[in-house]
Amino acid sequence: MRIIKPALAISVIIHLLYFIGILLYGYIQTKLYQPELNGWENLHFLQSEVAFGMTNAPVPIVFSVVIFSFIIALILRTINSVKEQ
Image (cartoon, rainbow, N blue to C red; front, side, top):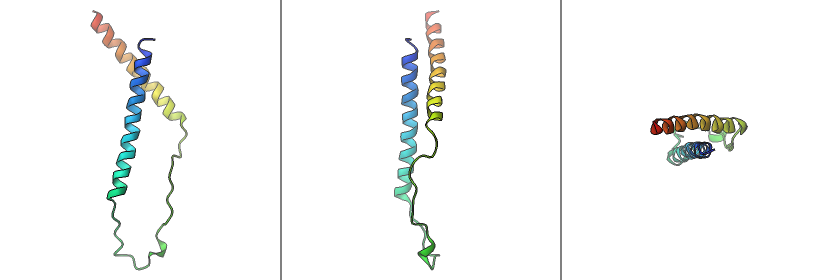
């Protein structure tokens, strides 16, 4: 139990940093985007609707956190056993 809690916490922190990084990257791309409209004579055909959100189910994310926690727990257990010897 001593290894499971830190492994789960590390996994959740890494996943949160990953998702925050993706959101920050998308935000920066959106802010810096400048469309080139010089070639268009009729702007009527440009798309004016945007879809926001996530289309995937949250189940793969939960599995990813659990599997990554298991891997981190194995690493922590190996480190602890090496330190004890």
